[in-house]
Length: 114
Length: 117
Image 1 (spheres, rainbow over the protein chains, first blue to last red):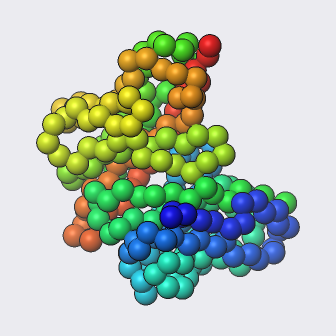
Image 2 (spheres, each protein chain N blue to C red; image 1 turned 180 degrees about the horizontal axis):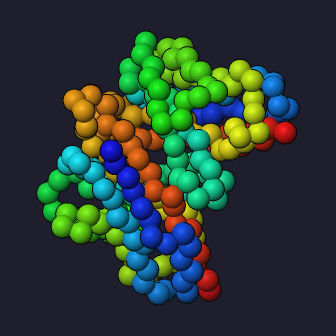
């Protein structure tokens, strides 16, 4: 099992460009999440999908959109990138969306917006 | 609303010394508590979690944590660290609030543990 995979690993964008971060899991999990990690701020939830066909905003959703393509895949889109979106992005999944469920994380995507 | 405070941003320690990484939380509901570790250039891995029962929780790699409800703390400890324990450690809390079915996971700011030879 590969667990949670993310592509790309690194990306440099210019302000105003768009891109989609891809995430896939092979653990048959129902719930998936997108976080961003910034120095000294821990991880902050951008969007989550409690189950296939549903998505909801997290703590910092502005400037992002998501798509739960199927049970395995959950993508994050930046329509018009801004320097404030320079960050490391992590995708995670859990069996259920319950408060006691362990979340499994991908290796991350390092995004720089110039 | 939930919040997590990790009291130390960086903790340097010598190999084979004991270490404690401190975590305090606030929440208006019952909580579940987690410690995750992030090795350089990797994603997060679960070290241990407290759901209920015994307040002393043992995790992987010799780490343990104690849930103290009265002090709202969940400090992480290891009696003897190794060079390979150098990483960033995150405390996180979740709890069902507002009648939703989703338990939001709130992370602390992280503590960088550096183990010196």
